Length: 593
Image (cartoon, rainbow, N blue to C red; front, side):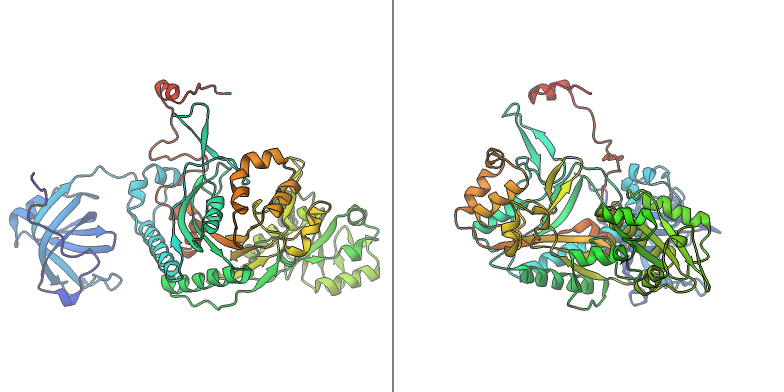
């Protein structure tokens, strides 16, 4: 069979040659970034994943090759043979690694032609994400996108090496499994050989990695694809990648130590950034109390202050009535923001309503008075207490939210992050890791009127709270821990339940009948009865981690072929309709509601 390359074989990449290579005969292959005709001499920037090299077609060197080069256009695929020459005086490009040399071409093969692309294959382009995703194969040619995907590869390779060196075994777990409640909707796959029955794509390998610990494998990991049918946003995809880890005969400290060291070494390997060991730790209650959220961004101050005790008997009934009903009043002190206009304050009020806050009260602290519609309702004693608690000084803008604790903390926590960016308080070059521990085991879902696991139903409660499971479940703390980076949760894990009776008590606290949990989890309960060791682990959102390493705003920019917020692939037009024959083979009949 004829080979289009003939005897030409690539000798170097397009970002490999320098002045030390002058005089060598080389063969380069790649895409045409741009073509320029300067008085009969044709210059082409040839591009591959490593970078660019300038190649030159001179009629005085090879007339036939030069004539052939007139046909070259952007994105044509070329193979060129030529001699490495020093660029003429005044034409050196110091910004490019190959900027001192050029290739004087003696042989050219046009390996393929290309239509004019819908956008320029370069980073400084103004084109919608919809167009970029529709032509993702072209978008991925851009240097920034290639850089992101290469960094992703380097991160995955390092993580595998690190875990292998720490005695972890990479073990694959099933992709076709059964549906189990883990907090999000499952993607279901109909079974042709078992009509009327369905597999589920795994939301995580959670149960299987626990079964591997029971099987005696001691330390397991996977860089694994997971699937969740949930509403999407910038840092969510229907299919995503986890770094999944599990260990036997350990406690929280062991898991956290391994994970923390992996992050420190990863950042050194990939970004050459030295992180300080012993990441700060907050309990869940402390994180929410100080920052409003369980994933605090500690790159700036601006902490929340609770003044419920100060205003519980005040004449401002909006505050005092909330406290009497079990709610709280918290504040943010926007230092030096007294010049915010009424419109800017109204915009902040609109912002917190997204998080179900009913309003945003405010006070501007002037040298001789407080400016606000609410100041008249506070006594001198209450005002002094607020000054001391909040640290109020002239020039400050004090922002209040009063409601149930969850609403107040979420509203002010997100407002804190918003103001941190708006006021330029965030150090964009910092990487601040924190551990958040001792999460509540359960939370109450107001919509479904039942308890739900805050992490998953296999998380162990702390031993001293076992007795509260039946009568006071919302006060039970768990042995869960999250790793947070710059306000984003990048990893979460827990010590698991390894005894059947405790697992059954947690299922019952979640409102499951014995018949239900036996039917859904009977195989796991039987395995726990087979001598399950104490075990625990952690899973990292690999896409989100790489997004932060690449300093991107969306995980779609670090995934080769991502989906849109409507879970569609614009490149392949998935999802798509299927044929009647395929439906019949699966014993399915389509009925669109």
